[in-house]
Picture 1 (cartoon, rainbow, N blue to C red):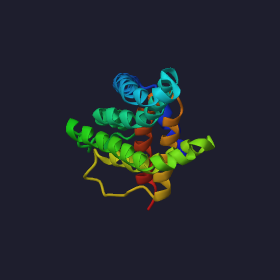
Picture 2 (picture 1 turned 45 degrees about the vertical axis):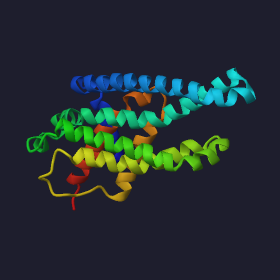
Picture 3 (picture 1 turned 135 degrees about the vertical axis):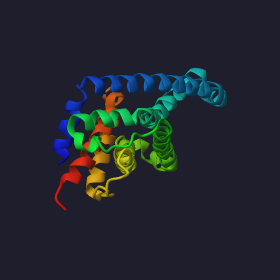
Length: 225
């Protein structure tokens, strides 16, 4: 089922409507991310550099500020992208259902702008909160080279699997509740977490993982009980 869901999701990205939504989400995410990055960089320069410039020199302190800004940016990107994606979640899911699940689409209840925004923000805040709680572990693992991304993938696997299943089912409150099996939810989360991990490709990950969530949920519902 996973391979079929991934294949269908990748094909969906070349659909004209889905492609436009993917570009829109990417542009908005990058714009917000750039503003947050600039604000974070300025905060680091004004707060961190004066504290350490007397010990290691202003240039070295500025370098540390840049590294910390990039690290924070790497962790925040997924949260920002999911929040933006929430604004368009109804249109994204509708485009997938229109192409692959028309019988389900005919009974769909559109997700309002407010509800989509709430789901996106909830996903973003959960990601930020859990990663902040894991900050001590990240600091301990930073010298291992590989420990930080492994822990980040593990955390986001759990969070994304749950969030994407919720978003995929949001248009169908009338259907019997049949949540994904734990292994399917974790598989969905793992593939999504890995998609957000790859630089440049992660710009287009939100729409791909949203489509993947729809296919995983709908294909599961089509399986015999």
